[in-house]
Image (cartoon, rainbow over all chains, first blue to last red; front, side, top):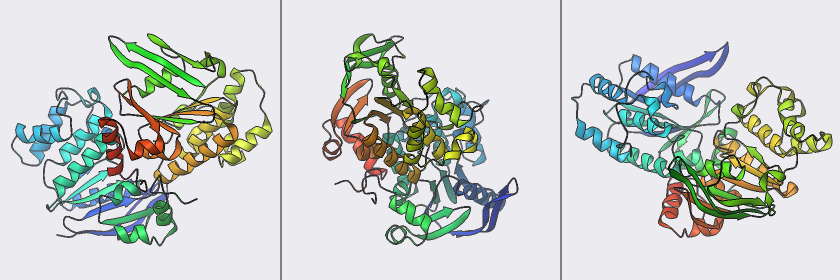
Length: 227
Length: 241
């Protein structure tokens, strides 16, 4: 089923931070939403999540900061059980252990509150919650920003594996085109609260049309920068 | 020359640095890479004399490091400034601390090099972008002409394009100013593109030190390979041979 949203927009203090935006997402599609700081990536991600959920679609959202996803007064056990209940799943310690092992958080004490874990572990816990069901769409906002490279690479590989062959579509929000390019089939470039460009990954990397996409593409690698 | 010889730091019962030996010559850049908890921040603290060494020594030109007035560029650009002060006053602090007077021509030259418009310094930290705040952080570090500058994840708060731009400005200023740069980062792409040597720190020990090219091409340890392969898989080393 294609997910479509039309006319999403947002403003803050009278300033438009997201101009009316429409978007179609195919079943199982993997999309990278890229752009500079302040270009409106997370705003579009949040608006998309709200709109689809309001229309009854199941969307898992991993926000940029685990603080937005976790209640500081509740144990991690509570969060996990609440997610299972919300998804109508029976408690399944084996499934939980499997996901936790893959994300290397199986050593964490679930009786603790979120702040009893490191930030990187909290972020992976939120990703683990998102992987529990089989939503129509998984929105990941800078999922690896608090992770070390080794853990980040493993987490991205796990996501690839988890999504492969399934019906869940993925929207990967990141400022790093180099990261997104390896993981998605389609890239959407945001600039100044608008979609500047929307194209298959290779097309956008090889022949970016807009200044925003050209800048991102030219700066995607550390070792082959233009002079 | 910055010289660390057999530096060990013990916190509580556990050693956070273990027999770390490094050298860094003027005008050169050494990147220390490793994961969280590897001891990167403790290493910076040890160089700055902020922690007691349980063993070993840290020297600059065979003298105590604090005598060369090392500067530090921090990770979170806005949090690194007093929010109540104008950026201009914050930039003046290192001079005040050393009872030096401001060399206006130098300030202008550094501002040009860092692409900071002259009136930007009259704003407060919350009134500039994160990228601009970090460039002011670099300006503050360099204003008193230090021989040694330490960078603690200087680019991690910036977006991918701003990161590369800022890294280039740092390297260009280093050519003029000839400071030695010790960069702590977990971004191997940055380390590979902008340092002369890379040291891999793991659990408080140096696993290997090599020139950036040699490390990317052929890490000598299993852990070095794991780090390099992870960076490749995240797209950070694209373009390398």
